[in-house]
Image (cartoon, rainbow, N blue to C red; front, top):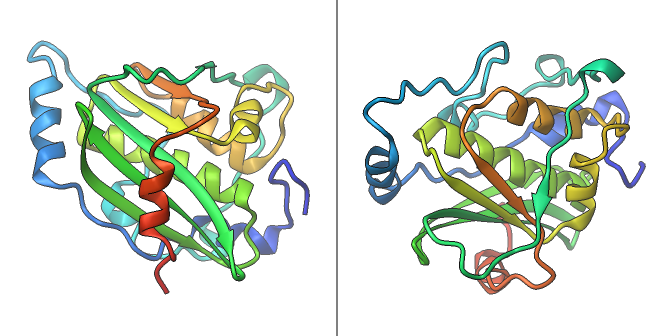
Length: 211
């Protein structure tokens, strides 16, 4: 298995499996309604069928998950910036981990600096930490789009994931999947890469991953 997330087809199911998913709490729904402009017709997706958050509970079969590689002329670059501790509003901290042959990721939702909700995802043991980091980012994007949040920030401490998303020559199907999500949404999202992330303490509290 390569560090950039490339893998054989029999591990496609590994990446798409979600074990535990907490539905968005009322605070997230309330924030989404308040943030959305009355004049704005929210269209999260055009040519790409976006997975609804509540459909992520059931693990997909390998035959249902066939990531494709974009041709060179259709590749997309995601820009990111260094983490800013003064970020307010709606933000999601993401992290991936592998411990005792268990791989998973966690997301913590903050609204104006207050923790409101957390999500836990578990992948198969064959998955790498890199794949878990990408799964966390993908899940965060799906959550933001599904709730109709207009201004949001996704915060990750995985520099390798950020570099892969910013590399137009990366052919990993999992990286391409996240890029396609960003290419088909019309709301401002900021992907931040902090050197140190305070939410790591929250992540440790959520671990160990659910069985």
